[in-house]
Length: 171
Image 1 (tube, rainbow, N blue to C red):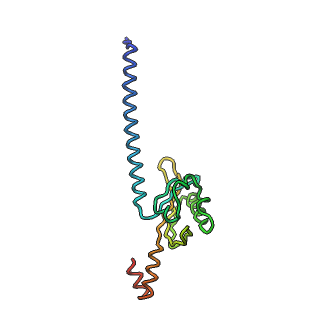
Image 2: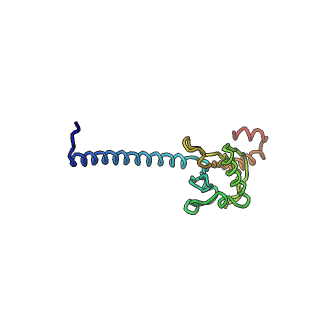
Image 3: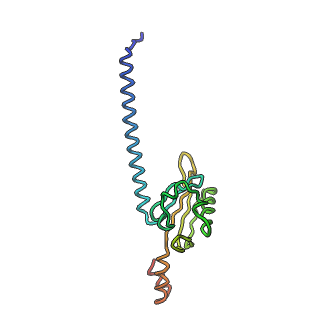
């Protein structure tokens, strides 16, 4: 035998369920916002420039050191493709990102020259695929370490001492 519940009880049960789900959703949004803020803080705290690109090759994020290196402002870069960002003597960077995405293999280059708004910079760079455990390949990341100042210092020191000693001092 089945006991018929009144419609008031059913509405009450639905209301309680809805309120419970809304509370869980608010908590999930709060957790997601905290995690996003945490990841943004890590990105901004890195001394190296970091650029991330979607699987379509569109810029997704850039930290302050990357923006400073290229002389860019984030507002002017939203949804720009790597082909539009890296032109002229830097067009090889767009090709490198495409290769990394296609092969899903990390590439590391040392002491390469980038042309920027304020002149040429020597950088060490790492281009690597961005992977999601569930989806797979979701884009690429470019990390840039500006070593221009280090090279200038090394050159100056080498004028006054044995270059091998200057190299050892800077390591």
